[in-house]
Structure formats: structure tokens, C-alpha cells
Image (cartoon, rainbow, N blue to C red; front, side):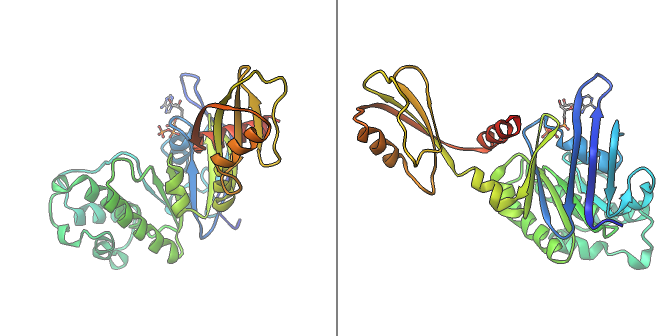
Length: 307
Ligand SMILES: Nc1ncnc2c1ncn2[C@@H]1O[C@H](COP(=O)(O)OP(=O)(O)OP(=O)(O)O)[C@@H](O)[C@H]1O
């Protein structure tokens, strides 16, 4: 048995139409962590999650959940994971309590070991236990989905874009519950395309882009990569050579009078950049700045990967 909660080796998926959604992805989700799987829309996150849940067949590669191979030991693999899907799906005519009881039945959880009311309390839905699911608000439905994913007490919980369309207050409640589960020993994987969300919650972040893993780092390290800022400065004369400063991470010429400077905002600010240019005798004509965002981190990483 491996020590990873999830181990993925060379996982690939090509859909029937020829779309290569995953191009050989390998990584471990360490046990006990909150692990973020990040990537822009269409990166392949849902494909990966759906392979783990058994909803999509992989083309090649292997995946293990809690040491159980998803092919050779599908039953145990499935029993080790709870998945909160992106889409809200349940029968609107069942009450939340019935929804959880049905799910527990599907997983073969004996009646004596069921804890439907406890789960409803945990997601603050105990007062709705006997209401029709269709009468719940969007946020309540999402919380019910989390409870539903936990009926068989899996050691791994996966949340696929859990906060899409969820208001701030609910998001905080959801995160509080996720943290509580994690403290209780549950390994959590969440997919999101918000870096801040992953930053707030995750111990470790993997990024996939176009079906490839481009980063897998402790959160602190990855966020450090987003400490870069970019400033574009137009100066008052043609530049024969690129001005330099030991404080710039990078400087590129863009046209004859414009330079694009990348710097780390922990070490420098825009004023410092301008002062350095002025120190070279250049007059400043125009300036624009922008924060580095996940996109820049992607760019930096893909650049690093490409050499
Ligand atoms: N059933 C399918 N048939 C064909 N192509 C698909 C199918 N499902 C997904 N794709 C394609 O595979 C690629 C990866 O999609 P996937 O849904 O895994 O990405 P994602 O990272 O989860 O994006 P999102 O955040 O939008 O859900 C996309 O180009 C998508 O169009």
C-alpha cells in the first residue's frame, strides 16, 4: 500500500472526438493534506476527477486511491473517495435526509453505521432534513452534496469547483467544514481556477494546463511565484541598449522607447522601478502596471518548462 492518498501515474485521456484532455499526468496527493488542483477552463481537471470517480474511462496510465488501483480494485478505490460534483444533481423529490439515506444504501453502509443526521448537522441542514430538496437554495444544495459525498466516510474527499456561483458567506461556511473534515483526518482535493481560493485553503497546489501538469508545489512556494509584478514604461528617447538594474527580475524592450520590466513586489515597488530608469538618465513618458496573476504564473512555469 502506498502512502499517497491519491497516486496518478502517466494518466492520459483522449475523448472519442480526438480531444486529448490529459496528456500523461503524474502526481501524488499526500495523505492528510488539502490539495488544490488548479487550471483554467478546459485544462482537464474535471476529466481527471471523473476518471477517479469512475465516470470517465482513462485511455492509459494508472490511478490509485488510498492504495487501491481504480481498475484492479475498483470497489475499494470507489469506497475510498467521496466526490462533490460540479453540477448540482439529485432527485428533487427526496428530502435531504432521504437523499443521504439512499446514498448510504448505494454504498452498502449498514443502517447502524449511518450518520445522516450528524452529516446534516455538520453542513447546517438539520432543520431542512425533511424538506423537499427542490425547496433548498443553491447554497444549501451544494452543502447537501458535500454531506452526500461523505456518507460512506471516505478518507478522501474531492470537491470539483465547489464555489462556482456560491456567495462569500456560504463559501466561508463550506471552507470551515472542509477544514474541520481535514482536521479530522480526511484528505481533501479541490479543483478551482481561483488562485486566491487555493492559496487560502491548500497545503499544496498542482496546476494543469492543456492536459499537462506544469506545477506541483507547496502553496507557499507557488504563491511566491505570483509575487511578480510587471510594469511597462515608455521613456523619452530611443533605447540603444536595455537599461539594467540588479533589482529587476527581467527587462525586455518592446519597441524603441518602451520597456517591460518584471520585478518582485517584496523587493521593489513601481516607484523604485521608475527611479532606477531615471537614474539612467531616462525621462518617463508613460507607465502602466499590472499584478501578476495565475496566468503569469502559468506563463512563467511554461517558460521554465520549455527551457
Ligand atoms: N465528453 C467529452 N468529449 C469530448 N471532449 C471533452 C469531453 N469532456 C471534456 N472534453 C474536453 O476536454 C478538455 C478538458 O475538459 P475538462 O472538463 O476536463 O476541463 P476542466 O479543466 O475541468 O475545465 P472546467 O473548469 O471548465 O470544467 C476540454 O477541451 C473539453 O472540451
